Amino acid sequence: MKSYSLQGQAALVTGADSGIGKGVALELAKAGAKLLINYAHNQVAADQTVNEIKSAGGEAFAFQADVSHEAEVQAMFAEMFKRYGTIDILVNNAGLQKDSKFVDMTLDQWQTVININLTGQFLCSREAAREFIRRGVVQERSKAAGKIICMSSVHEVIPWGGHVNYATSKGGIMMLMKSMAQELAPHKIRVVSIGPGAIQTPINRDAWGTPESLEKLLTLIPYNRIGQPDDIGRLAAWLSSDEADYITGITIFMDGGMTLYPGFADNG
Ligand code: NAD
Image (tube, rainbow, N blue to C red; front, side):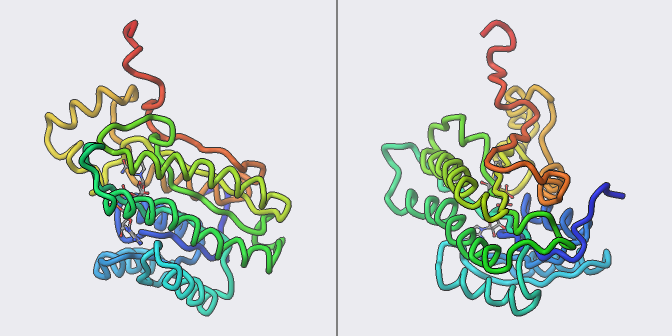
């Protein structure tokens, strides 16, 4: 039993057919929100998320859209408004990696990651903010006119060789989030980021897929376990609630201590 409720609120989670996005969608639904489950390609997986929510008594539907395409994002929000009338919570979660050594990185690898991870968050946030401002606060739903949660990463502060495009996208999300938070706060819109550490999802299977790789990964995590999507899901649900009403413009790292410079734990 949660100490707060998102009952009656409408939430859109991008990339909610897999990993963290799915974990976030399930926790938002548990708190009473109705969901748009966005996915890029995998309709079967998106339908499964929808079915899990429905069989637990919640409300959800799936919608395909590439978050880096303006027209697809606008079509997705149009469908959201048609089904639910409005939006209360946006979780900008969709993201991917296209890894390469810096000197070998192609323009396509660079642009794909920036377009999806960063521009996708801009496009979705802009549509949500327009609606939050149009509608304003509805007291019986929430103290805020709207909430935007950006899925960042520990790599908004930890440089990451071999992943320059990804780390740049997450550094960009930090300033996107903070600048939106500053501009939108007078409209009673809260904007926050979650900075996950290593969470066990398909995006980083190489890092946990074998006992050896997992052991190596755990040397970077003082708390000595890999995170799970529901860890992030619970934080996202709480941040969406009025319990977190005075929080805006910050990143909360949820990383088992990965940002604590674990290499210095034993004198460096
Ligand atoms: P994942 O691969 O399981 O999920 C990624 C999701 O993004 C999928 O649902 C995919 O469909 C969606 N997606 C990709 N391209 C898209 C597009 N163009 N349009 C719409 N959706 C698209 O990986 P994950 O670990 O769940 O990643 C989710 C988010 O969390 C990403 O932003 C990632 O950078 C971030 N993150 C993950 C970790 C981790 O350790 N897993 C750590 C820090 C940050």
